[in-house]
Image 1 (cartoon, one colour):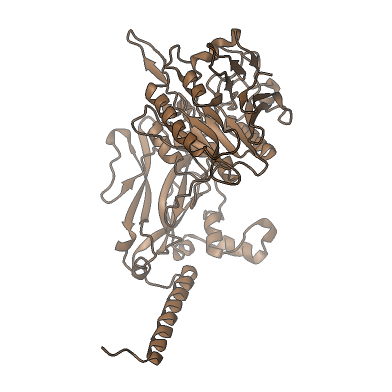
Image 2 (cartoon, rainbow, N blue to C red):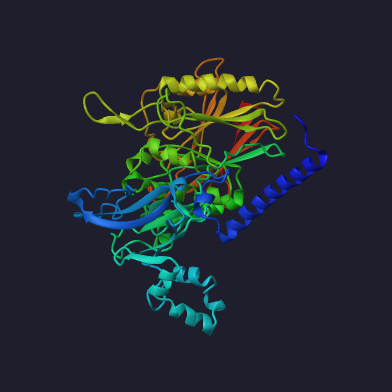
Length: 573
């Protein structure tokens, strides 16, 4: 077979490169001007296919009807009235089509707007839509008489020319439809609740305003949309700072609600005027985050107060938003109240594990509970584990044989998981040149927390220790694998660290700490309790762990600062 002359080889190579560059240029320009046919866009080699929303509507129905899904529609399983109405329910329905099945004349949903509780022009067109149509700022500072005339002129017909239609007056839902665009087409819709709802998820945008004029005093249903493909963020890597230090903020017992929440046992009482529990709690947390700049946040359960969280997802997203906004890695375990709302622990973890900067894990399926896992903070210069963090599910209540219930305890297979994982970590630490350190976090205190009458205590012991009376050796197993500090939540007004001395010669002591509750929506009382947060500072150079607390009333003052570990040994000095 004769080979082509070099001249023709060069010409064909140039042609191939030119076609490739031209194709890239066309795709790049189409990203901004969207001129390629839909059928072509959805079949590009690098295109990541997903389902797109082609239509959306809101329907209310009688509760007894079951509110069945219309043929071809998917019902988002969240009652827009949050069960505040006896005889009616309301749902958002979406129609989805796989991108590869879209035809060139197919219209897809590009945006949403809500008419209620938002500003509008004289024709009742939400200013959000007006801005979209005019493509310019409409703030008072930038308005001219001409722009004000343009704002006033937009009516239903003009909105329709730009793809906007009002689905129905009652819900106030506006939908914008148009030609498919791979980065602008709506691929996900969710419902969140509460005046203070937020959505920190990548590619998601919470729309201003609420559905319905009267959706129940607690509902305030909002819509949030995702554009483009689902973005699964990569997991952050915990790493000790070049200085050798690593700071942890423990957030215990947020007790967040769907909506702003009701303050309980506010102290000082003169600060309780117009108190909104969750915003007040978040203000304090944000202040401490900015003041202390922790490297890692640990949430030790009861992030959600199930009784006041008919939509647990809304409460959860509020809870983690400050950490995502500041790009701080965080991990959590569950308490006894988290799964008493609308979602199980399995469902909650499926959300948490996909959120940005989250290191939370469900843990092995053959181990009791949800949230048994181990994390490491790596050395500044290499990937040797410098600090190990053990997380355990401390469960909730368990029924007694003769009736009633008590607190469940950490199971033997959870402890075996800890031991097995510790063995693997120690193998990785063989070449680590400093003393490795370990801590453990869970929600409900183990029985040893009750030994305050025989052990040294730093901090306040105001209420009885509420936890299991029996145990399978959690304290001894944790001490055996090298854990020097345990910290929990659950008992809101206990904030002490207790040095649990070893019972037998050859055993090691261990510090048992409380985080101190921070949530204004949880109980406090007991003579007046100011909400607080606990911090730990680990110094890998000196193999030390220090801890202190900050209160809402004096966040700049370190309370009960103490050294828990010194030179790798549990310290009680």
